[in-house]
Length: 616
Ligand SMILES: Cc1cc2nc3c(=O)[nH]c(=O)nc-3n(C[C@H](O)[C@H](O)[C@H](O)COP(=O)(O)OP(=O)(O)OC[C@H]3O[C@@H](n4cnc5c(N)ncnc54)[C@H](O)[C@@H]3O)c2cc1C
Image (cartoon, rainbow, N blue to C red; front, side, top):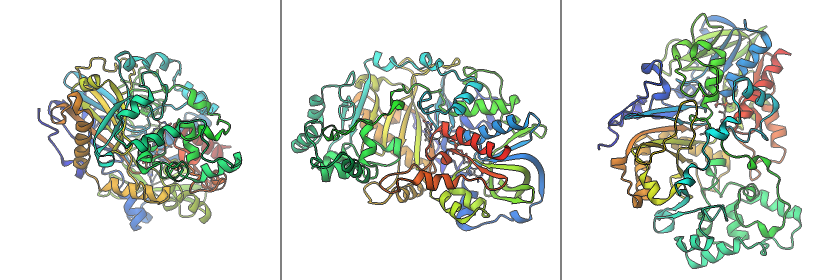
């Protein structure tokens, strides 16, 4: 079978039709304009960011100062992610059904990071998640206001108990594994089980079996054994307080090498493991932060264990398109004509009419491909100038409103709203987002995974640090693939950056952002084929034959910045994050960035706070 046939994604055409594949038109109401079915480079796709870059980096004004005010609203929201959509809902609740609201977003789809990918392979249709993955720990992390919104949208958490088939892959004898690459470890080695981070988990081989298979020296193996020894205290003689201080100011990599006496080879076994969560490798994550995640080397310190009830919640709160379903539920609640249905089940296959999002007679309008570049309070109104249609779009446009909620990235706000006080602009600019890539690869079958007995592979030093079969979720008529002889979606995570550079988190993120923007779809495709062939080849995988479609969800501006004890002061959230989200007259500031972490529940809670600031 021929490989992916079109490679012209660089220019942003973004319609990759692999042999035998068409976009999932049967799910779509308007296949010609149905963004979830586009493949190629998605996420912050070509066409979505150029205006912002020209405006913020090069100071281009697009003639916005001369744009006449075209229309008037009660509220203009900048950013159509979960936070902006939730802000619109909270505002309508406060003002009543008559409230006129305009939501602007620079992408061709709504949802911000919460994006949906669809594919059709032969007779099979697939839904994947392009970004924001799951409702994280809703019982412990979600505030009352965020939980209430879930309920209002019809999301019953108990529904996931049956929708997510937790035992599915285990019932086929599949478990997690680790891939050690030849560039770092001398030879490619795939080991079933994950004895390094989950000692004793069901299905894992005994640590000694795992150790025996590892491509590292005997001396390194001995050091690894010592790391797990609860009788060994690498900080013996220090008080508990001193130990905590050391752990908070020492990277895990330095902790392993300089304090526990491990080789670089041992540190490499863990290097990329925190990437998916922190967007940073062990060289830039504090040892303290990895203690609760099962990383070794801490048992002998005899420190009181950290209480993290959130990690005891199961990771099952996942729609087939991830939190894109939350965005879809919000849009349906705001604009009922956009999609039929009323439940969390029927949202999964609901046909969305993108043509209904911005109709002139809507009270609430979602305007896509529209980048706000100027937000100013003028008397009793806020004017919002924006550019529609990308860098080669039409004339700049301007609207006014009683209020504005900026639910966009915080580091963009200083450019948008130049009248904000300087210290607040500086605080906003501190929020440098984590670059990351969620790649969905449709393969014609998953027999190789069965042959290798794997469902999920961590790769601590490879380009993709995590490769997995899709989550086994059946919801709303959507059935997760059960037949290993039929196609399935693989999910691959890449986090760029500058590992081992000695740079701080923000500098690493800036470098990663630039790297991502320089990569073409073909670059990603080459990496995907290389890594899958090397990882799964022993199970019979041949990328030339087995890959049916690829969507690269590129997020140069991904997770919001989280205070890092290696680089930020202890009171960072209290000083910097709080200052950043202060309201300014009729302008309030939302987005999960305002909560100091990258979570959907913060996007919602910060939207509620922002609206409250405007209407009380
Ligand atoms: C790959 C990935 C995986 C994630 N996984 C999870 C997860 O499993 N669970 C979880 O809770 N969270 C997760 N997150 C965090 C995610 O950020 C939040 O869940 C949530 O989606 C954030 O919503 P938001 O509306 O605050 O921000 P965003 O989703 O970033 O939305 C802001 C929107 O504003 C737009 N915008 C910016 N500037 C402008 C402008 N000038 N004009 C117009 N529009 C503008 C942006 O492009 C974007 O569309 C993940 C994030 C990423 C990137």
